[in-house]
Image 1 (cartoon, rainbow, N blue to C red):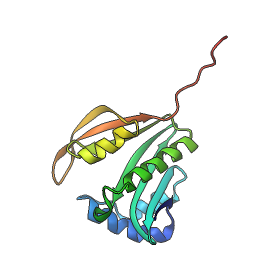
Image 2 (image 1 turned 45 degrees about the vertical axis):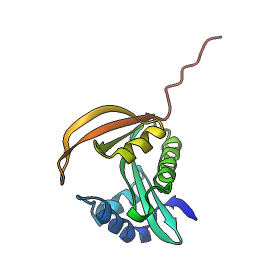
Image 3 (image 1 turned 90 degrees about the vertical axis):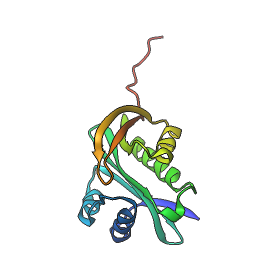
Amino acid sequence: MITVRKAREEDIIAVTELERQCFSRPWSYQSFVFELQSGDSWFSVALMDGEIIGFAVLHRFVDEGELFNIAVSEKMRGRGVGDRLLCDIIEGAKKHELKKIFLEVRKTNEPAKSLYKKHGFEVCGLRRNYYDDPKEDAIIMEKRVFEDRKEENP
């Protein structure tokens, strides 16, 4: 059974290793420690049988958030782990009362773009040559979490 929970200090070594397996320019151990200790982050891990199989990091900037990082182990892709993590991140954004969530995704990463669109993210921009190894453009996507609510006069 797959479970999702808030990350803990003892998770950081496994998260860092998974990061190295998934990305050509991985975050450092210290970067994950910083996010774990930050009061402005929502950092979750997905586990199966006690093993970390995925993680996600949302960082808050006033009333908006940026999905800094989301990863799923290669052997667990296509099994709904990313979906569960993204749902948890969206719930975190709601708890922080964020208006929007932003993210960047490789232009050619169709599975990720499909997942984000499924959850209401829309394309809002492009960053040319954003990624290295290989060099590639990033699609910027956003999701509205909360709208400014105005009282309607009856």
